[in-house]
Amino acid sequence: MTRRPDMAPQDLFAASLLEREALSPGARLLRGFARDDAPTLIDAVNKIANSAPFRCMATPGGRKMSVEMTNCGTAGWISDKRGYRYESEDPASGQPWPAMPETFLNLATRAATAGEFDGFEPDACLINRYSPGTRLSLHQDRDEQDFNAPIVSVSLGLSAIFLFGGDKRSGRPQRIRLDSGDVVVWGGPARLNFHGIAPIAEGCHPLTGRNRINLTFRKAL
Ligand code: MD3
Ligand code: FE
Image (cartoon, rainbow, N blue to C red; front, side, top):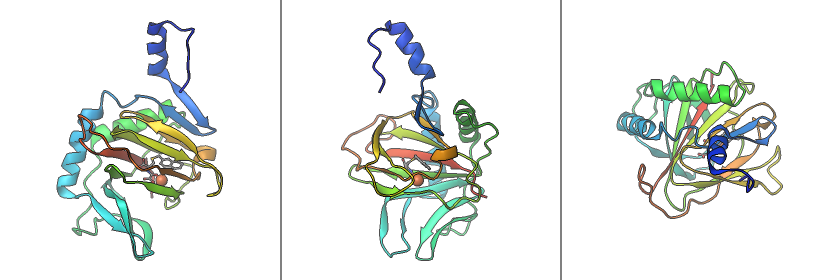
């Protein structure tokens, strides 16, 4: 976090509203961008989970991911013994994934624009749910058709330490704390960087209880 001991409290507040921290070329952290929308977003997540419940997906290697996932949009990300891919139906039900709520689309496009990626049209939203102790190991997101489109991520509920690596799995990743309402836009040269989530610390959040929810908006198709 930037320390600005020389600034008056009202200016610090204004700066935090506008803060667009460049984590690396192509990666923009918009602190608190979704703070006001958070209750509405969580209501929408709960509705989606009523028709497409959170589940731990199997990995191609035959293990189970500890993060619980579901999707909305015309495509949803899945993992099973056959690999990682996007599918238009939820394999658990055989039904299409729930539609992307208007509130999701609106937030994702406004964030992309604020993060300097105009004309973002996400068709998929992967929804991750973490409980204390759950982690996501370092990986790249490369199952989308077009790496020119950014990914917009929205953090809700319990905080997390985001691990931001480079273009190789090796090397010490940066550790960035993500709090409820924080939004990050990942595009350009950052689009294929390795990244992950450190084990979530114990805690309880008024919006989500003992959970962290992360939305990632993607152009999959
Ligand atoms: C950097 N999710 O779902 S979001 C994922 O918090 C995923 O649940 C994490 O990684 C989470 O694939 C991190 C931040 C994120 C998402 C995609 C990226 C960072 C990224 C793609 C490229 C570079
Ligand atoms: Fe990822």
